Image (cartoon, rainbow, N blue to C red):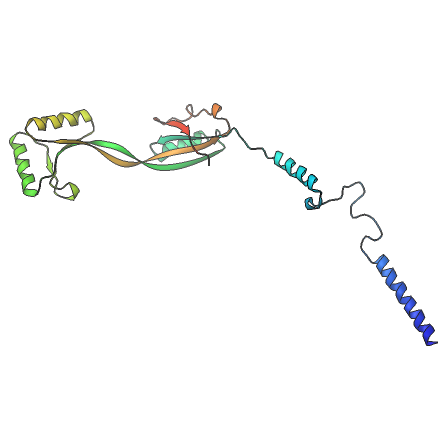
Length: 218
């Protein structure tokens, strides 16, 4: 009796396990994971190598590079306001723009002078000799790296500077003439344009002294 009952229990257990394996697994029966007529979604990594290569090539073709773009620098602008005006005027002509500032040296005048004397007393002696020969409008420098130099004038016009030098030389002195310079800021506008042949900046930029040249893209 016991053996018959054990046999019945084992049989029932096997039936139950078989039913669970058959009916309890997802998608074992029933519909597909996608609706009828809809292509099954697959990861690119699950596709064959040749298919992946074609897909990558197609993606690359949808992002063409703009080979006609050119980069142009406009300037120099004398003031930041001139630069802002140009930037506003050219807003529709460029795909990108940037402003930058550079430092440059420019002539501030021409200086006529007598070289520095050995000491203050000798510099004052030379100054008295200048006065005795009716040469006025001089200044004895008393400090800095030009100490004991006698300044005979700073001129904007080089012709006037040469005239002053010749007058002092005719009185028996040995004046020097040198160009003075100073560092000043200048302003530039860099632009990326799609077609440089159609880029018309001259009719839009009103500041004077402005030029254009090719520059590195950014």
